[in-house]
Image (cartoon, rainbow, N blue to C red; front, side):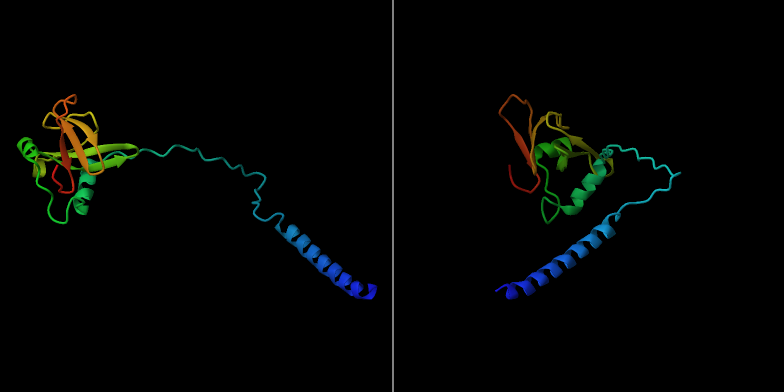
Length: 159
């Protein structure tokens, strides 16, 4: 019975020796891999790190992007409500920058149009106060304490 185990033991020792030699070569070859050798006289200065700069808002660019996408319909822009037509302004879209939402409002017509961002609590061109901005609408009230609200929607849905 010892004669049968002896050849198997020799094969096991040979396989173990070959594996150990292979492992030793891998360790020796890979020991210095990835290290960059720096010349003794060259000093490497670390780069100064800064926070990324906040992009300046560009209302005209945002309005052009919204108009090109036409998210409110597949046809022309929706007709403004009677109140918006009377005061000559329209709700053009919603812009989200970071955690804040802005209502994109266009006052005037054609070349004289003025684009502005408004946050919740700011006054619209008709004198009402913006009380809520959602992904596709803005709600205003002539008096924030009163329950009377007017909702301007982008997708052509009736308020």
